[in-house]
Each structure stands twice: as C-alpha cells, then as structure tokens.
Length: 329
Image (cartoon, rainbow, N blue to C red; front, side, top):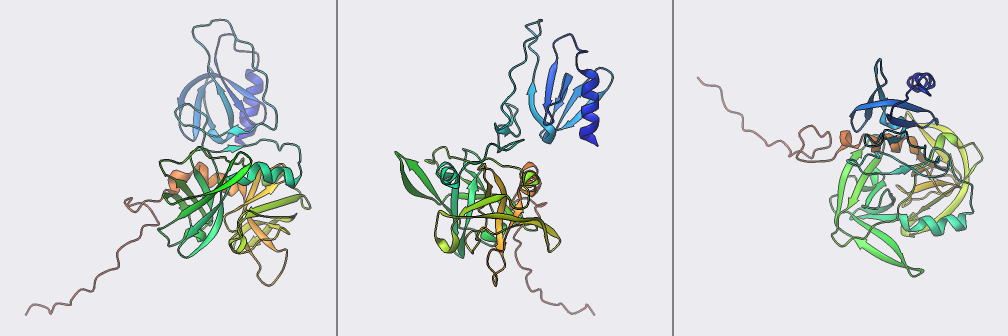
C-alpha cells in the first residue's frame, strides 16, 4: 500500500517542479521530486510542496541532490542497466554494506559463475566444528548460520584469495561476532585482522523471482571438503518447517554446507543453506534471502555485545548459592 501511494504521488509530481530539486529514485522506476529535509538509516523525509512524505530506505534505489550553484536543470543521467547491483545504504555518511539487484542478470553456466564467485565463499571454523559462509563487502563482513558459531568464542575464517590465476588459502583468526538472530539461524561476522586485503564479495538476489524447477547451485565445505560445488533445482519455495518457510532444493547439502550461499543461475545469492533431511537424498533447505536482507537492514537490533544490558544474547554469570540465614529471634 505504501509503495502504491508513493507511485501515485510520483505521477502527480512528474513535470510539475520547474526549479532544481532533489530526486529520489524508487525501485519501481518511479521518482519523487522535492526537497529532502531529513535522512535516517531506515527512511528519508522529502518535502513535496504541500506535505512531507516519508519513504522507507528499502524502497530507495538512488538519491540525486540538486546543485544549488547551477540554476539550470541538469540532463538526467542514463538509467543503470537492470542487471547492475543496487547499493543499500547508499549515502556518503553510511557506506554500502551489501549489494542487491532489482532484476537478475542473464543466466550463465555454473562453470563460469564458480570461477567468479568462489573467492567470496569462505569456511568458518570453531573448536566445535566447521561451516560455510560468504562475504558481503570488501571490508570483511560475512554471513553464516547461527548454529555454526553457537556457544563459540574462538572463530577463524579461511578465505581462498586468487593471485595470478592461483588460489592461496589464508586463515584469519581475528573474527568478531557483529550480530546474531538465533531464531532465524543467522549470524553476521567480521574479519578484523590488520593486514587483511579488500575482499571479493557477492550480490544478494531475489528468491521471490524464482520459479519451481529453476536451476540453483551451492558452494560450501560439506564434511570439511572446502570449495565443493553442488547443482540442482528449486523443488519448492514454500516448505514450512517449525513455523518458518524455506527454499527446498535438490542441490546436495551436507554438514559443513551450513551458512553457505545458494545461488541462482545469474550468480546471485537467493538463500543460505542450513539443513537437510538426513535419511533422504536431494532434500536440502535454505533460508530465503529476503530474511537475510531483513536481518542485515536491522542489524543494529541484533547487535551482539556482552556489555550491552539490552542484548538478548548476553552470557550471564550463574547465580551463586546463598546461605540461608535463620530468622532473628
């Protein structure tokens, strides 16, 4: 309803403003023209003349500000290709945290995509086991499953850097837990080693655009066999388990794949693999990428900190045994 209201208002404003003004480009290729009066991490307020419209940040593709020093309206820039990644949190004060696409790129072969994406898929190790993950941005933020790191404090990440056509394995041991959601089985980590390079990263896609029967593939470390690729199809988009909806796939998922990406045939992440039915084959499941985006967009609410009294995941000291005192006589 909100998107529709924004779209109708945009139609009424197109061609009305003659003076230079700010422009908010929306995902549905519409635009809002006016004066931006406030910006927050989750919304933008714009004065359209007779009212102030609050636009959710999730609906914004780009913000173009008017140049007050140039009274003449500037020619509009050429639109971005539909396959170009749209940055989230794209203001200068809040740098790009992850990238997503409004429309998928043309399909490619798994062989081509693995060579392009493999460097961004990592192995997450703890003293209790291992899992997989994938890097979101060049600063070393990465996604995995909560159950991969649950109860652990020593976490390391193995990344395969490509140099001169050769893959070189590098283990990073300075890894911080940034945010967690136990109930959605999601965890956001960050590699914080000083000598870490800029990391290759992936793009988030749209699982809603998938159809049953579409090809998908997974990259991960099943049973510790790093950089393993499995291919299959999407069996269903709405498999209900424990009150949540999952993507079901025939791509082979095994212990160690948890936290790794499930890709569409355009090389975009459409889910995070997190479980399988152990007594069957070709029955793997993934968390839809829409849940991942919600978690990332609201990561401040899921921030992990033992020093934060409002953090629902604090590790508290066990209560001490108090000695019962006899009543005073």
